[in-house]
Image (cartoon, rainbow, N blue to C red; front, side):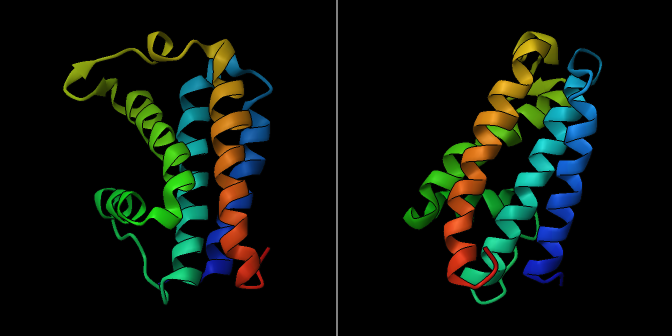
Length: 137
């Protein structure tokens, strides 16, 4: 089971990938959404490791339930869930049983502002509070 430090290392490596992809968001918007989500996932897993006695989400549904059911994670969940949904549309062109093209779900010129600058940034700010308390901030 990866440690909090290992999850944070992966999140930071994913952020370097985002920097690269953001050079051409028109051609990489689906990958930006996917990498932003997996970056968030690793921040969430680091929080779980520190805050919940080394617990992990193990799968998307369990992770979603853990975030949604604990009020302490309310702000993390508020930003995690839209990142997850965007990545589902980006990867599978589907959301809640409906076929969705990613460019119709979120225009490429809005991907950086909405997913990276807003959702991921806010999630990281919320996660930092838990990570700071564990000495990992």
